[in-house]
Length: 171
Image (cartoon, rainbow, N blue to C red; front, side, top):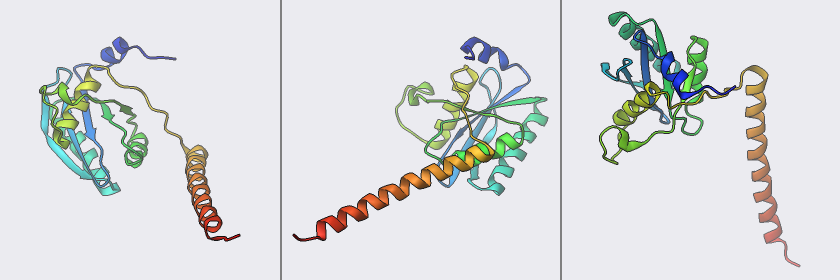
């Protein structure tokens, strides 16, 4: 079932906290806004670790309490696999992260890039309903995905080793 952009926009109400997070290998940046795009609180920098994710959760809860908000919509631009740990953590907290494909110029018509700007752009895209709902494998399916990735890596290693052996064989 496909969710329309209008229904996504309607799901963000005056009681919704909109979060955009720029994902990196070690340190992420999150920014919060309301339904109109007004920034709430200061941007948060947090580590790609359980401690960092808990810091994010406390930050979100603090903003929700301060502004009397009762639900959250969380958006990320999934870069590589670095977002998966955060996604799994958020899902355990009852928050489903949304995917966006960002446009750098959305914020200020300037193509320069920064983590803080990217997080803001991501939150705007989510607020405007420009996101997709990702399929995040769980339980055995997550294990299968890890196993398949490992198999692919080992297959490539084997091919390289075989090529080196064939290269060194003289006829």
